[in-house]
Amino acid sequence: MIEAKGISKYYTIKKRKNFFRSEKQIVCAVKKLDLSINEGEIVGLLGLNGAGKTTTIKMLSTLLNPTEGQITVDGDDAVKDAMKVKKKINMIAGGERMLYWRLTGEENLRYFGKLYQLSGLQLEKRIAYLLDQVGLSDSKDVPVELYSKGMKQRLQIARGLINDPKYLFLDEPTLGLDAPVAKQLRGLVKDLASQENKGILLTSHYLEEVEELCDRVYIIEKGTIILHDTPEKIIASVVKNYHLMIETSSLSVALQNKIKKELVNCTIQFTDLTDSTSIHIDAPFDPTSFFINICMNEAISILKLELKRPRLEDAILTLAKEKSA
Ligand SMILES: Nc1ncnc2c1ncn2[C@@H]1O[C@H](COP(=O)(O)OP(=O)(O)OP(=O)(O)O)[C@@H](O)[C@H]1O
Image (tube, rainbow, N blue to C red; front, top):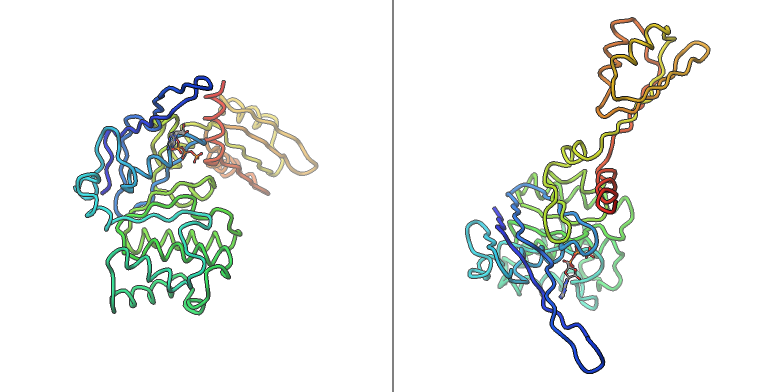
């Protein structure tokens, strides 16, 4: 397990006071943050620009030392035992960084493998396995500069897996990819957690991706965690708005009144059509089962039913609105 306890990061920056003088200023990027990532689990880290995500990932991946607090990876201290910890982790960033474009896909993997002290048959076998896993075996001898964006990103994944890390940090892994390629990569990420038991920390601005992949999500703002839960619970705690559209065989006025009376705190609109009734409901909970029960008890047929449930994106937008109000 990766565990961060009370980690903070302060940067010292020089701020120009006038033409001749500048003064030191302390910027707090991360403040007393607690976070954990278990094996086989995908954990999301979300926040607006400047919230402290990159700083947190850099500390967890041993690229930066925390100013205070402690990070352990399977019990090993990420600062004191950094070399031991580095062998267990790796990072995959989106975009087109972290690859040598003049080298072929295979040469890139060989280069990065050697940085992890892998060599000989063990390294060659690992390279062949990873190229096959990401579907690049046929393009292994092609220079990376000739790869498409999707191919480069698949090679990034193979690079990040070269040391067979137990824990992976994914920073915007599907940035700028076409929808089908991004979908394929999401499948690969899911398999890494569920089949290879890797613990994954994911940052992404694509909230649908976070909702689909993550078991738990941390939302940070100004370097501190403001929410931590499963995506479902975060949505339920922030957004209280389900919209149900249902069309049934004609409802009597008496039944419409009964429904209105039972559904307190909901906005309901009935529209009588020729042979049916259309109902629109805004509710702080999912009202589907309530309507299905009523229709079954009263022998009413359901002709159409459409539920618009709130998404993680709605929750983040609501949170951002609350903060700026
Ligand atoms: N090297 C640095 N020196 C000084 N201040 C920094 C440095 N790196 C980050 N900061 C500041 O720390 C805060 C957090 O930055 P960080 O890059 O961790 O946020 P982020 O959530 O990753 O943002 P983004 O989504 O824009 O990448 C910001 O106020 C930023 O200006």
